Length: 265
Image (cartoon, rainbow, N blue to C red):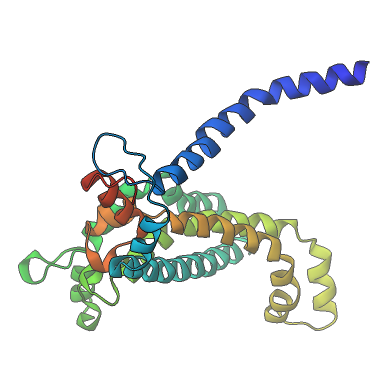
């Protein structure tokens, strides 16, 4: 009897969350699926059945092909760059570095700001203007006599998406650093000592022992970063606006829905 009461109380406590998720997550997903199969174009709802016609038109749209390619390139660069830089920073802080608390906070700071703020900052840093209007990284490279590094950044058709990924890596690498640092601190020191006794170098210790033990952390980081990369919108708009070479599905969806009022698409 007591067990049944506890079970009912548990169900009662979690039922508001289950109801909210059912309505505001899965309910809206189901509604969006229904709208995507309709011919709704305009401010007034139109649920006229169109079937998979919207999907066929979408997959045949050359712009959508560009969006998918940009998303894949951005995801690869963003995920790999954040993992590599985050792991490097974590290993650096794990060496009993003096002032570790300060540097840990410094590396984590970009995570505390939004992608919009990051985009505004990096829009100035990657200002493609030349001559007297030169600023940001281009001005720095020019003053250091590294003019071969001066470029158009996000205005470059082939490398524009890489410039956006650079800004995203700057923001998220500190978060990945914190994840890896927690994983490094969880590895027993005895494993390092035993490997050193056996004559292993530091490189071999990290390659053969540390990195394999960090696989669960890496998997979690990849899932988080992959989820973020698929939703990228505000960073691109803040840095470069709505340029076709930097177009992604989120921007396409925004313009189709709120600029063209083609809700079914």
